[in-house]
Image (tube, rainbow, N blue to C red):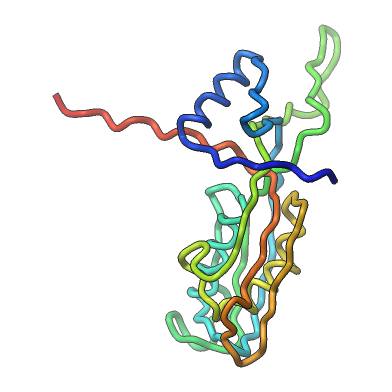
Length: 206
């Protein structure tokens, strides 16, 4: 896949892109190229066997939610602790979580609208505007990650990242069991993600 030059979206830019899509306007070449995408839902039973860092079952669920959101999963990620042998809040070597999340996939074909006399076989798939964004995972990127999460990010890379639409993966992970290696957590990739929706302004009191 050809490499893509990615720019950071500001809230104002996202609003302009949404308006441009609604009006059918051409996207400025200096701005991210926006195209239609559809959400794909996933469920996964994730089990982590720790060597360097141990997590509580609820801690694992929270960390996985951070990774999924950082990679572009929809905001309604559900990460449920499972099989907490040591109990909530107590680190254990073997912990699990049930995951439910949605990732954005480019819409190849727009759904057709049936004409008179035709019967729709399925409901039209709703599309959302998406664009390619460069994402970097490292120590404090996002801020909830640190060097001790290296092995967990390796598992995320191998088990969950393939469920995202990605390109240009730069894998510089160097995890050493039972060692917290400086700079060992280093993974970047382009991901097809949803254009941020501008937050509604907070009404001021008269």
